[in-house]
Length: 302
Image (cartoon, rainbow, N blue to C red):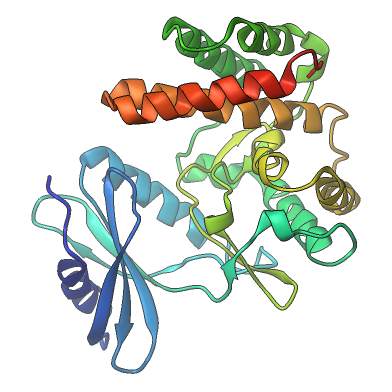
């Protein structure tokens, strides 16, 4: 299906939410299978409309919406709660929610200490302490420790099969995955897609979290990997100190090591994405990133 325009999404939003009269609309990044737009109505309120292009995307949006409804009153930050939906002629539903307050976090500017890093650690702990039953009821993925490790092994195998992963880097990943002692974690609820654009801040705290479509029960290190990639080691230490102090269950000792591994495997996933869609530009970009990563970790133990 061809992408919908921002004006088409604005029209859908006006049907989904009674009283919403669009004044302006602009397209937002929504991924390959979801159209998204930011809409300002005549009352000055800002909304976000999202509509799936494929049946699989429609199913994922429904799961996300079910899960988010269960978070009311549970989180120390805002989440996007659907204010209205409309059934589309070609299948699925478009959903509309109020835009959340705050600005995307800048990890490179994160200063170690008790301020924003501590707030970020507490926010992570709140997600990871959510009842697993919420994910199960929303029919989102639930993995055991062994299943999740096997998924990572398969990911590395697929990346290796492309022939683009440097031998030294591939060996590093394989050794990490073979170290059984590092994989003794208790699966918990994870956001699964934390990135600067999905974490909003304001007044020195986390004001909102977006992008819950990859929520699952898995390795808590998933939600730490983006910090390792973008923040200083000292800032990450401050985040994890508050995280460990807040969580009901103490984090396992290898949480940070697996997070480092996952931050590296993100480049492998970018490579796999490029090969899957046949985009030589993405593949070339991933190959260059893998070369830089290989040089940067040469001789290091993970």
